[in-house]
Length: 170
Image 1 (cartoon, rainbow, N blue to C red):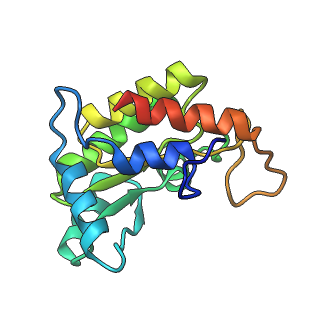
Image 2 (image 1 turned 30 degrees about the vertical axis):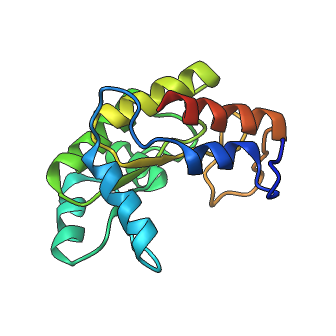
């Protein structure tokens, strides 16, 4: 991982310095989340898994909603969080949540659903669905739920490639 003169790694610099929207998708939720992150000491985003949860979070006065992968997979499908649900299914759930609330939705994008091309596609699909932000894990695939022992992480180079692909997909 390369670092700039300030000691910040290259990927973090590109995220910080990037234009928020460089493609034709106008993601107002992402703008709102960025404004909250820049102006508030913290942004409270409770972990939820369906549209009703998102609406209730808004009614309760929260700042954002976090679409929990663990909760979504277990609550919507009854599966353990072991990468058994597809990107398309997760994006669809994020879309339903984003449509149910005016709050920004942050989604769990697991490991990015494959290699760097899959990561780019995932970023774009979540963006089109109206999701404000995603997080991508640095686990090997198939991943294990974050609450389960025995997780393995990818090399620093592979993690950087995933994160670079996500930044470049914007």
